[in-house]
Amino acid sequence: MSRSVPEKLRRFYDQFSGNDHVLIVINADPDAIASSMAISRLLWRKVLNVTISHINTINRPDNLAMIRLLDVSMVPFKEIKVDQFSRVVMVDSQPDHNEDMAQLKPAVIIDHHPDSGAQAPFLDIRPHYGATCTILTEYLRAAKIKPSANLATGLYHGIKTDTNDFKGQTQIEDVRAFQYLLGHANIHLARKIEKVDLRFDLLKYFKIALQNMRRRKGKVYVHLGSVVNPDVCVLIADFFMRVNTVTWSIVSGICDKKLTIIFRNDGIRKNAGKVAKEGFGKLGNAGGHKNMARAEILLSDLKEHVDTQDDNRVLAWIINRTARRAEPKKPKPKK
Image 1 (cartoon, rainbow, N blue to C red):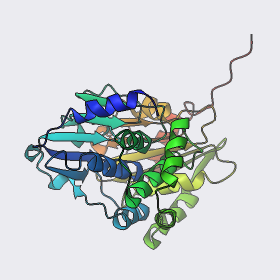
Image 2: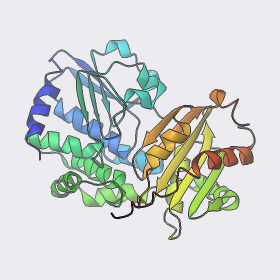
Image 3: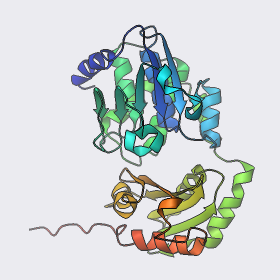
């Protein structure tokens, strides 16, 4: 653990007083959920109350299982009155990641995604880390707080998920945090969460993907059309990355008047976040990590670019904007 962590923890605590009503805002996935649990524990008995709020609709079975099995209390952001809170904490996200988040003025931002120029009295953004859970595990250790079995299990699962079982972006700090959590987590509970990742009603999207996919030099492109939830695109993108000849998986779908595009790759001389941002950053929110990224664009902002009611045209448009950008960088010749 870095010598600077205790200093960061002190500055984190300086943002709060005993009279504060704290709102934690997340885009719920395992890393964000567990990180919000950790912040809630750090602030226990230091503020009046803490509320965790999620801006996204949670439909993924594994995320729902995590919330249920770890007894996480959360409130949809649309039900929140922000003016009732004296402090806002944004974790595993930054204001420009979402329209609702952009309206907030967080006192604290803790994240591991690329720095988008976010402003807050307290910032701890570490793009080189594989998971925000790693940062919060360091905070807990600096505060000499032993995590409960549920909290440790959540942090364990968050690191495991966001590093893709350490096959994705990973630092030695992620490994150390994971090793520490192993001694406190309920591994049987973690496995139970991991196994719940499919619902029967989602199987139809695999059929659509297999029938409509386009393959280009190790890349798989799929447009699913209308989806019940953007997380369906994540499931399909991750599924194709398990095929041994696939180096890129780019899957899109339309939900809640938005086009969501999910990017996955094998991490070898490629940068999914850069491809997403260069291809779609000027049209909506786009970015991510080296091996996984996401773009979200309002359908109203696509009218001049593509007919979103024509699935084939949408797919062709996405391929056109990503194909060259997704080519691996050629190694520089040795001098």
